Every structure is written in C-alpha cells, then in structure tokens.
Image (cartoon, rainbow, N blue to C red; front, side):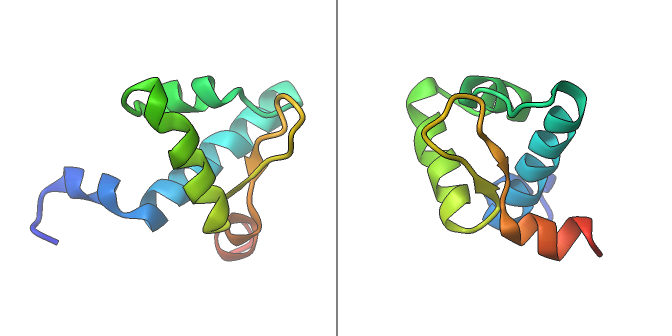
Length: 86
C-alpha cells in the first residue's frame, strides 16, 4: 500500500468486513437486512449501477449473503467465522 488511507477502500477484504459489520448491526437493530441501496448509502458507494455488482462480489467472497427475498441481506459465513467470533 502507498500509505494513502483511502486505498483501503480498494481492498475487498477491508470493504467486505466493513459491509458485513454494517449489515450485522442493521439486522440487530431492525430485525431484517437493509435494502441494497441502504447498504450502499451507508458505505458511501458510488452510482447505483455499481451497487449490485459490489454486493454480488462481496457475496462471492463470503462477506455477505442474500436470497431472492427482500431485506434478506446478512453477513456472510466468512465474516461470521473470521471476524465476529474472533
């Protein structure tokens, strides 16, 4: 890394951990997952066209999980195993 703190936001592991923590907190507070647009807003992600690919990629990596049901976004198994139980 170059020392630029914003470079962390290009690290999918960093972003995945952060997104999963945000989702976990949201679920604890409201009893359901956030809408994808809500997560994107909380994460300060760019244009809406990028939200789906970002969330899908983080799910592929195990940081997030979701089903076809609305508000089903949850932390993925990688977050549960690597971070929250540590």
